[in-house]
Length: 292
Image 1 (tube, one colour):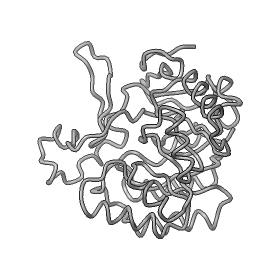
Image 2 (cartoon, helix red, strand yellow):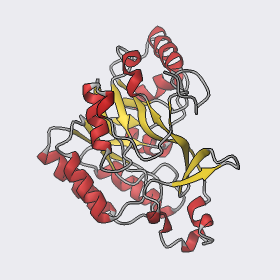
Image 3 (tube, helix red, strand yellow):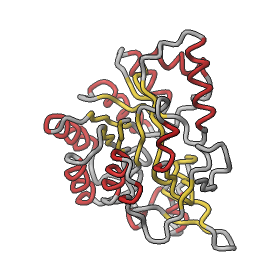
Image 4 (tube, one colour):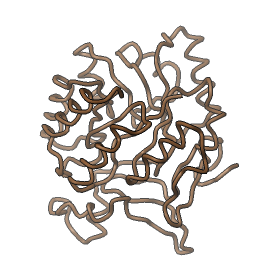
């Protein structure tokens, strides 16, 4: 099974981003995703620099490099950047909304269908495959049982099954996106004058219940799970079903998590302080559950 390093979901400094990908280039990851997927105001790296970084990694590593698009497009500038990526990207594109898929299909380019694409049945999978999908990332709330049934149904209706299935396997789950920026609201700032305050929260902003249970993680316009999703102990159940396990970067320690997944060594996985973990969705249970 391959292991991928998903795009950085958080607002990191330029130095952090550059150092992270320098280290990632020699990591155990088979696939590296790059690009800003959450908010276009995060400009530590400009679009030209993301493209240059993808070219640099493509030329200097044997890993597959993928450029990810923004998930929620809000302005004409967002649309212009999306079109630019889909017209001129030197690498494979991960499409995180149907607009990107439409542009890539028009250009007859293969693509990765991101987790934000609502693909819940075999006929949707068939349509995406016909449009040029090379790999799809299963929506994060689906279970192993759902995936197994979906792929069997896809085969039964004659879908060309020559594509890969990727599953979000470690990190805070991206659950929802909103036009409202929750991080700037927490700082009592207008979204239009956020001053990129989310850079103060490089692993998101924890939201706790009155009982002090961490229930969500806020990351700008993105709402994530409160517990860290971790399928390291579920890898055996992914065999012959999942082609790629995705690790979502939390910090430089996520490269050790990549190695733990690649070599199936649970004891080698670093944990953040007080980090609670879950695997409920994969086990067809409530999301916050941790089933051994």
